[in-house]
Length: 323
Ligand code: P6P
Image 1 (cartoon, helix red, strand yellow):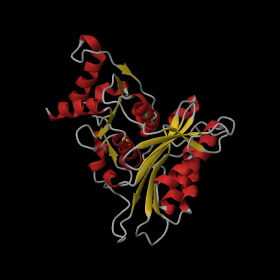
Image 2 (cartoon, rainbow, N blue to C red; image 1 turned 180 degrees about the vertical axis):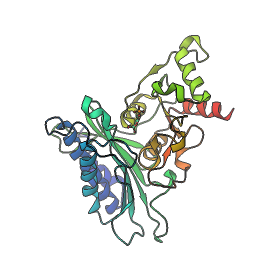
Image 3 (spheres, rainbow, N blue to C red; image 1 turned 90 degrees about the vertical axis):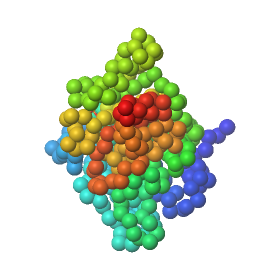
Image 4 (cartoon, protein in one colour; image 1 turned 45 degrees about the vertical axis):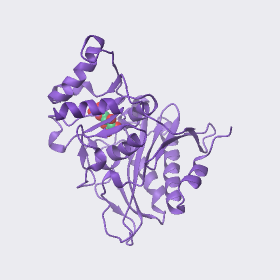
């Protein structure tokens, strides 16, 4: 059976031509970024620039190129009020009248430290809407998001999308000119035996995280009574996609080194879009204790702890914190 194109899916699912156009523009930006990623070595786009982003992180040439592609692809949408980018310090307001228009928060190239070693990277986005009364800000809790998604630039390029009640994945066709439905109705297994965390940070973790991970590592001989595997790709998009496909728990906790900043991962364009996707796929997403989607953002680059994935493991950690 001929699988459905992203355009046909949007026409059937969205029912709002301006939102459909905006998502299509985002998918087009991801398609262009996929080509830039695949050609980076030959176009001299590896290595690091002398610039740093608002987080103080060294910017890769493709971080900046991907941001330009993303913003240029989206900004001509008449439905767009503002852009919030990991690479730009402030909110970019595109037009005065904002009532009823959309805000796109995005990380144009997440995990870009993987580029030079040819490992997976991704783009992440979340779409929210300014209230029709024009009241409201670009900063809304994840619970109010209209749509979120990511593109994973791995062995294949996959575009994953949710409107909150299901998650569908689209693969870039071999001739590279369209995204085709390949992962309908993605669902996270409730149980898992696989965790994802940067274990080199063990010395910074609180006792709850340290005990949880130690119990997983003790495996069948320990309190968990079963073996656990570990994966850490240094690309949140790749780790979340693996969890969507086969389950798992991803942890980037607040720890003694990043506590002053509130954690490492950014709420608006990493944690929230992924939390919306994970919850829509039957998983849970917290800051260790409370749902990420309930956090009321105070600033565009606000950071948070992130624990997400298979429901039973995320609940187990939250209970450990509560006790
Ligand atoms: P670490 C990439 O920089 C990122 O924001 C996420 O994609 C990833 O999960 C995390 O940071 C990796 O952090 O400490 O392992 O480099």
